[in-house]
Length: 403
Image (tube, rainbow, N blue to C red; front, side):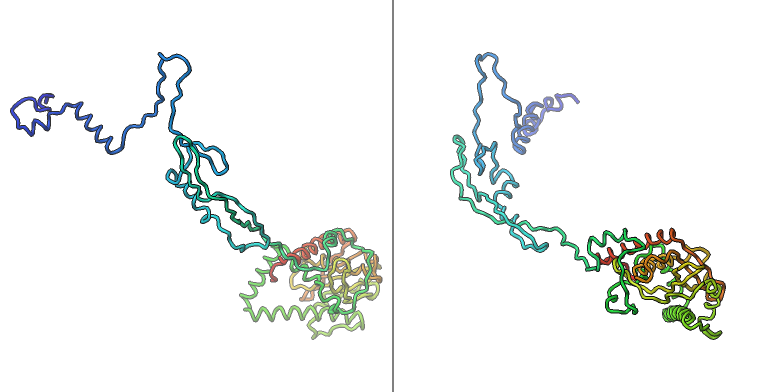
């Protein structure tokens, strides 16, 4: 099909058909541009006007309609915003009071206020030739409140040590120069608020030790039930008390437990150890406390062993303890008692040897672990770390739950 057929130039046709296809391609393009202009508006010319080369002299500055104005502070604004040109300008200019309100202070106790000055409802009637703001309402002060949202200070619990004394806990010597005579009863009023050595060790044990103890407890509860486990704990405590009482009775009256006594097997286990005593004990089940570090306890025994004054810690067990480390916190407990008993006038600096004795429930010969002065000082430093941790966690109320 050629162009003549396209525009209806050949053949006889009706008037309506002739009018429909009588436009040339150029005319149709112009009509299309006209439709686009009516829909979207004219094309914006962004090109700068060209300067005429024929003109001489300085370039002619084209005058434009001035829409400048001044801000509330008197600074000239270029192309100022109006209530109709920008939503953000409308929000900032007319909705300030709705955005910033004076709120109630719900957090913290300290607050401060200041005044913010602004010009409200500036009606700018801009003259296109003078560019002046004709009217503005007077300034008005708005009170804004800034609330101090810092966290409240941690409330610390009182402890019997000052901050300076707490810092010096780790430097306390095993043989202190401060002497004190403790009461004979550990339940005395002056000792009532002090923690026992056992309590300090219980609340500062390692996570591994806590996990092992908890697993043992859960295993026993599954085997015996809760009531059976409670009876087991009561029996163990009673057995330990009977064992210590039988030793105390022997040292005081030389009375030996009978075969029917619950402590007879334990007595048989430690009989050989008692033969190494070169003299009767000078102290049995003695109440002690440390006047500087503020803890208390009961020292099992102080006696001469191989002609040397020795502090002794009795322990009973149903399983073998082949090493000193297998006795867990027994060396720390012994050193804690030694540090406290060194503060008494009776034993000041005289005890330089320790001994942990493990008595077995089946009557097996007891294991004896002697500790010389070097070992005692090493375990004493470990005890001080545990005690320091206990006092800090007591002050900060972060002690773990007992097992």
